[in-house]
Amino acid sequence: MLVFDDEDFLGERACHGRCREPTRAYELCQARGGTSARANSVDEARRSDVRWIPVIHESAAGTERATEFGEKETAMKIYLANPRGFCAGVDRAIDIVDLSLKKYGAPIYVRHEIVHSRHVVNSLRTKGAVFVEELGEVPEGSVVIFSAHGVAKSVWDEANRRRLHVIDATCPLVIKVHNEVNRDYTQGYDLILIGHAGHPEVIGTLGQIPDKFHLVSSVADVEKLHVDNIHDLSYVTQTTLSVDECRDIVGALHQRFPHIKGPHQEDICYATQNRQNAVKELSKLVDVILVIGSPNSSNSNRLRELGEQCGIASYLIDAASDINPAWLANVQAVGITAGASAPEVLVEEVVTYLKTFGNAEVRDLTVIEEDVEFLLPKELISIESSNKSAGAQVG
Image (cartoon, rainbow, N blue to C red; front, side, top):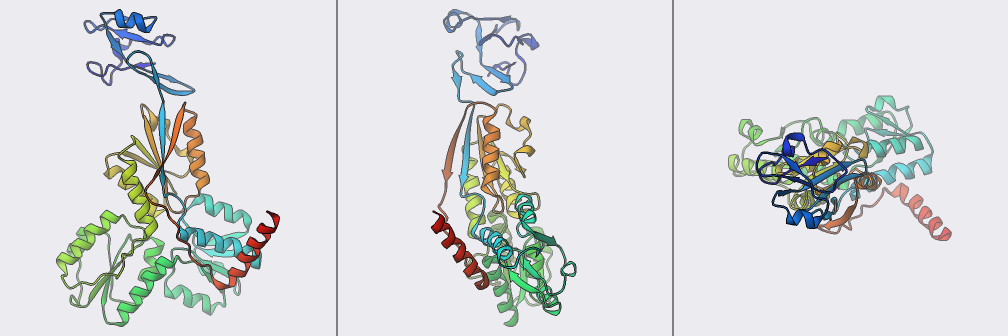
């Protein structure tokens, strides 16, 4: 049992470590000399001329916090950010793999992880999806799905040469960026992509045109950038960036290149913006933020970084098993969000785990309701319709 004095003994064991008896509900410590005393009741504590010390009881059941006179408070509030988890592009990509397996049978090859979620990838793998990094791993003539992140034109060319049956699961919002790049390039513009080097979406976007394309990841990159055509210059962005980070880089671009042209509509996707706004609201209410998402998920990493920037300890976890109990020590409120590739079942598992620490109150924190849907490829719509019809008959 740890005993903390909110003034003289804050952060230290009261009574120099002497008050360790866990069987009492109350611990008292004299203001002078650091000696200890006990009260067997609240009334006795009120009559005592010694200082009352709040108590934190630690046990296998969780953490309970006693108030000034031993009245128990709720151990933990759990705030669930809404929106969180799957976005429309991720839903569509996963549906494409599922429906392709139903239509064509296993194996179905998928170039790169369909979305950056270990849980999703493992689930689809058990159904017959085979994940590859290069098309050379795919037998000629096979069905192959391109991931939600999009691919370079050279990948399409290789697929055509090898007579692969391609089903494109690229997020429509990424396709929008590709279209902007190709349009501006044909009009003679030099282009700048704001994004993170090595990310699959960035590789695919850079691969839309053969030259005159520059990648920047920070304001410092903008300051060092050299372009030949400063008058016909445009920029696009990776869809999963931090909104605030992107705003700073765009500001630096406009300052350095006053004639630069941006997209008609912001490229950062609605889901990224909404989830980041929800984290900002969470940060006003909680002591810790848990972001559910895989380490290679760009949007999940941005959520964790944003929580830290808001002054809240924030951790990226792939599952409840990644939680370090030390993160929750003396925590009164926990915020939970999930990256756009993380399924809701992982959120439920984290909530269940947190409840093992004692009584918990779960609350939704809704910033905005999402109702976006993206159409499936035409060749799979009939499969989806038949599945819905079968479900309606069963119901």
